[in-house]
Image 1 (cartoon, rainbow, N blue to C red):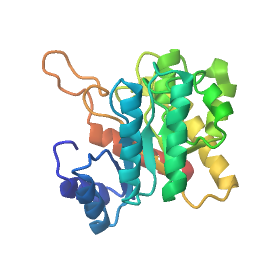
Image 2: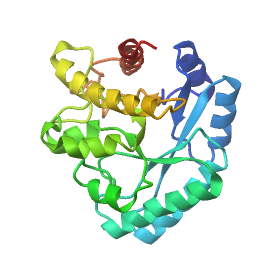
Image 3: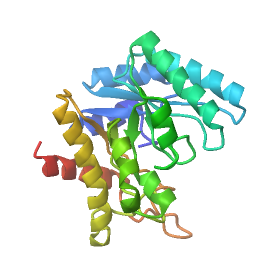
Amino acid sequence: MENLSYTEAAKRVKSAGYDGMEVSAGPDKRNEAVQVMHDNGLELILMAFGGGSNFVDHKKKYHDDLLDIASYKPLFINAHTGHDYFTFEQNVELIQTALDVQKQTGVRILHETHRGRFSYSAPAIQSYLLKMPDLRLTADYSHWVNVAESYLADQASNVTRAIAVSDHIHCRVGHPEGPQVNDPRAPEWKDALESHARWWDAIRDRQQKANAPTLTITCEFGPAGYLPTLPFTQQPVASQWDVNVFMKDYLKKRWQV
């Protein structure tokens, strides 16, 4: 919906039966995003990113961005934290920065499992989980499937440790050669969809046992780039909107909610 205004997007999302939106809004757009979501009765998750390959500059921008976003009091912040080429110690500094901002503002900060970040693979994140017991995740395990070139069956213990601290789900479905299947409705992706859904089931089961009041899920099949396109014309091979609505309806039916 990149070509729609926040107002147009919010109305479309609301009419489709979603409860909220997860928005990547720059500093000049945050006031508008918050107001539009409020006006349309939608919950709002805001996203945060660091900036630059230089660690000192990156950390400052990350800290300032988190503080500014937290001032809008979103449901929580979903953060893209660090880089895979930062050292372990540097990424720990960034995670600690987020924990400090969370403590200061009272706004939860979750860290998305994502290629290119500290959390780029299931094995890579294990040291952080051991070092930082308060670390909480947004589960987008499609990236891990892509990095590992497998559905992670041979590293179930790594995924289990991540599930134990995953509080939000991005229900993108990946495959061994890419972070997003072309259309999860297609029969050839049945096993891929089921592999991811079992992880989401486990996150939901854990939260239910903990009496969590809500489980948030973003239907996050991405646009062209993530969504394969035909050569030359760049025509998407499926409708991004339809796929995301399918994911919402699929999980509601699976969980009978």
